[in-house]
Length: 268
Image (cartoon, rainbow, N blue to C red; front, side, top):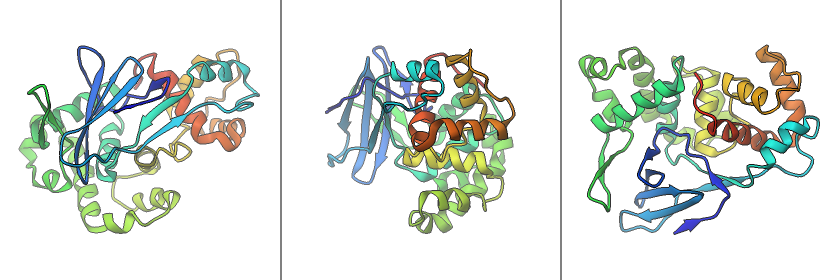
C-alpha cells in the first residue's frame, strides 16, 4: 500500500536503484517487506504471509523553527513533508554505522551493498530477481579473514566482530533501554564511539536529535543551504550553535538538513 509524504529519504545504502526509482527490502518479524519509491510515492508490498508494515515517520519544519536563520528555514520548509522508514534492525543499524566510520559515504555504500550481495540472505522479489539483506550477527562472526579481505573489509572486521558479539550477548537488554541510554551503552563496545552509536540509534529510532549533528554532513549542508549565515566550523562551537537554533525541533531540523543535502550528492 502507498504511504503519503512530499518526498522520502532514501539515503540509506539498502536502497537500490531501479528503472523507476529505488527499492529496499526490510526484514520484519512477520516476514520481509518490499519498499519501493517512485517519484514521491512509497509503496509497501509484503513478501511473506504477514501484512505488518515497517515503522515510518514524517518530518516537516514547524512554524517559527530555525527562525534565526531565515534562509535555512525557507530551504527546509520548501522540502514539504519528508518521510523516512525506520531501520527495523538495531544490529543492521549498528553494522551500517560501523561501515561508515572514517571512509566516504559513497565508498561505504559500495561496501555495504557488496557485503549484502555476497553474504546476506537472498530474498526473492516479485519480478524474479533477488535482494541481499544485511548479514546477521552470526553470519558476520562466521566470516574468515580471507572473506573480509576479498570484500575490501579487512580493516572493518575488528569493529564488526566486536559489535556482533556484543549484540548477540546484550541485544535483548539494549532493546529495553531508553534511546539516550542506548547511545551511551553502545559506546561500551570496542571500537564504537559517539558518532557510530548516535548514527545507529538515530537510524533505528528516527530520533535525529540523537544523531551526531556536529558531523561533516550537517555542517556542510547547513552551510550550503544558508551560505550568508555565519556558521562555526569548530565542532563544539557548531554543536552549541545548532542546538540553540533548533530548540525543541532538534530532531526535525537535523533530519531535514540531511534530507536537503541528500538531493545534492554524497560527501565524505
